[in-house]
Length: 168
Image (cartoon, rainbow, N blue to C red; front, side, top):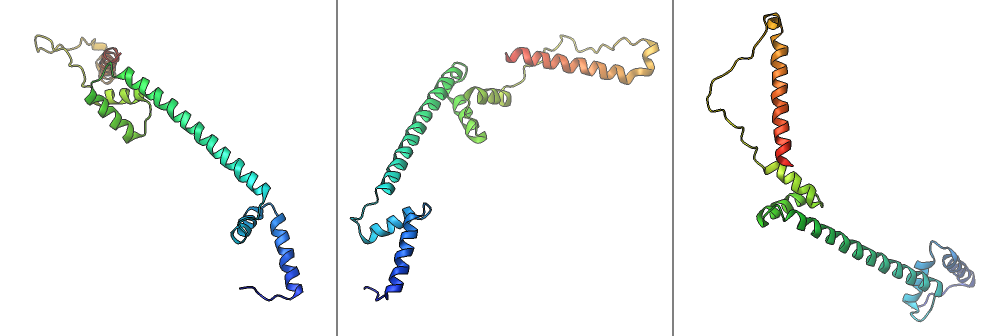
């Protein structure tokens, strides 16, 4: 169904078509519309741009695949390292922890797993259960708070030191 257009309208449409075909922002869309109506019409510059974009896309996809393989190999090496210290059940729990927290590093996840699951080493108990009171000089009697705080810090330091030496 062809429209009957007067010569002035035809000239205005031709001018619009030339403008659309020559503007970089509209050239591709114009070429695609023309090819829908006239499939044999060729636009070499648009086809070259499309080909370049397709090559770039394939190249980026290939780079992504290579990078993914590299990352997976690195993760498998990390998994092999930690498998020396953990059984399959524990490794499954470590992987669940990795997924839960978005961690991709097996060694980091293993440390987190160990921190969350490793029971504290029992504190050795003395053979007798007698309490020994600290020797307090009478001149320090008014400073009992400071003495108590100091003894508490010493106990905490001893616990931390014991914990750090058993984890390494």
